[in-house]
Image (cartoon, rainbow, N blue to C red; front, side, top):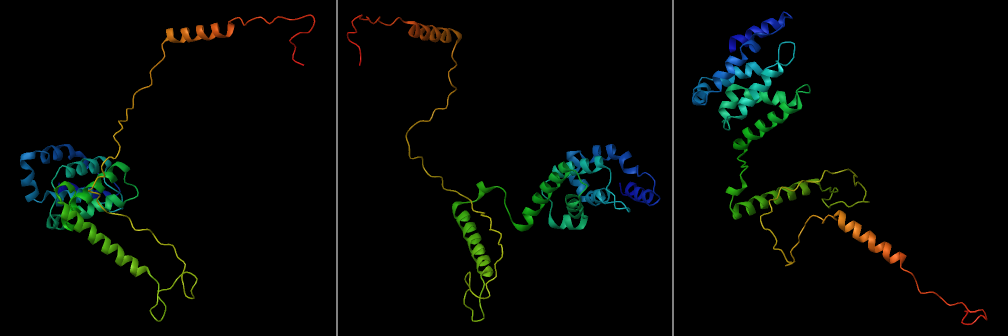
Length: 241
């Protein structure tokens, strides 16, 4: 794999098609996809060879899209890598380069983002399984974030020469936009439902053809019902004057 990467770089400097890696891609992926040999490949520093496969060419062009796709998919199948393994192999820098590259496709960028998030959690001691945290640990986490937010807010406060906080309209007050701090709290207490009324969302009953005909018949009968005749008097009796 290293030899194929070196030959492709040499061909690229001569402005010739780099076809060595793409020619052996199927064979290489069929070997490293053997689950019982993954640990052996990792110990043999296969990540360093994959870094060479993902590295840009001497003319700053990216390797073939099929190579990038297959290698990134294989990396997603691995457990989170240690910091030493990421540093010695350089695979983390290669994935970050593809993640930030403007010509990388959207789907590969999403995969690279998942890899970066997965690899950075052990480094920053972040857990993505919040079910494993106790209630006290969550309260402690929220308290630390509140203290951090309060520190940032105090740092944004403007003061005069005497150390007195400035207010809007005071001399020296600087009007500037501030980005609101996001809330990173975990809501662990769910309010109880206060209403005993059951909400049923059912489909509206469809009116059959027979019901439509019956309604039309009743409406026609009601409108066509003969009203009582009014007697007309020649002498003009019972006329509303």
